[in-house]
Image 1 (tube, rainbow, N blue to C red):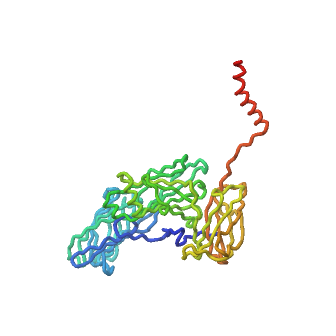
Image 2 (cartoon, helix red, strand yellow):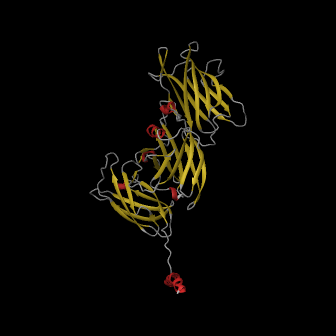
Image 3 (tube, one colour):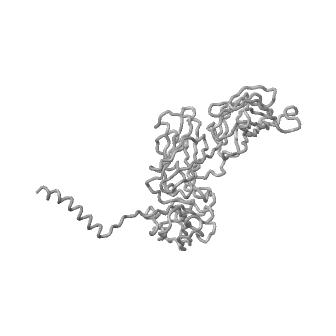
Length: 455
């Protein structure tokens, strides 16, 4: 069963490869600033960064500024910008840049071996003398890590290098940063958890092994002005599938002690064979609600833990988006050596609650990656009521298990996968009858002997 990213899982659009666009300066990979009148021109400035997702060992970042007419998105010619960059309130660089086309491309090359920052104009035979390409290399100890980068931008000329103006913008972009943390779980041992921060730098990661809870912090400005600009805050956690404690059907999460709604927590079991990916996505509504219930410290404190509840049915779309499969099982905890009753329905993905008529299917339960535990071929109920499968689990296996439906209605691309955990049954101590009798005699003697000694 091959896992690939699909367009939608449980109503959640996957972020893999999707380009963020924001209207205000809230620190995403791309944003278009609000248009403003400069003379008789309606001017807007866009800022983009790539690569969109980078690790902590990236070799560079490209930043693109375009000054354009808001009415037709055509760049203005002969534009001069003054750009100053900041991170964590520290100035990184400041420089005046020129572009004949109104399109600016900064190739930022991180270099920690020097304290100096060099800015070199590129392109053409004699850049700067026979015109301005707008392409610049910026090299030095800048953009060496992910996080939130802020810019103060002033437009100095527009349409002509002789047409001097003064218009300022504040903008911000976020360079995603991946951090890895080792946790030591009581049941699953040492595990490596990765967090991809799409807004700002993550810090103070901790794992409470007694309560099975992860926590981490991120700087955040809770001022009313900043809340007006922020549209989304996104964290991505990669949990190894061997970390059985954290591969569950439902999670509890909070920010600054405020419980997040279920819609802010999305599970992706398709994008990776090695990891379950959990997305914490806070839109403006959730961020505003949190701001009304927490104190004024300038950070977000995240927590994530397995929920005591089971979220059934679990919904997955087939790989070709032809069907939607809803799956539940009883008992809620899959146990080694026991039979689990699966209940599932196949839905039309485009019509709410419309089940599909009788179609053939193949079902497999796979331990790890390749070990087949159970297989069944069948046909769904013609009346749309839930179909059932009695799945027998061997008594010698515990850990992650993949529940996969394949060949729905004979289509090899119509498959859907679910991730579960096989747990070890609780062991109830057994005592020989002789031990039980001795215990009764001792207990009885303990009650009677003191009375006998008093007489």
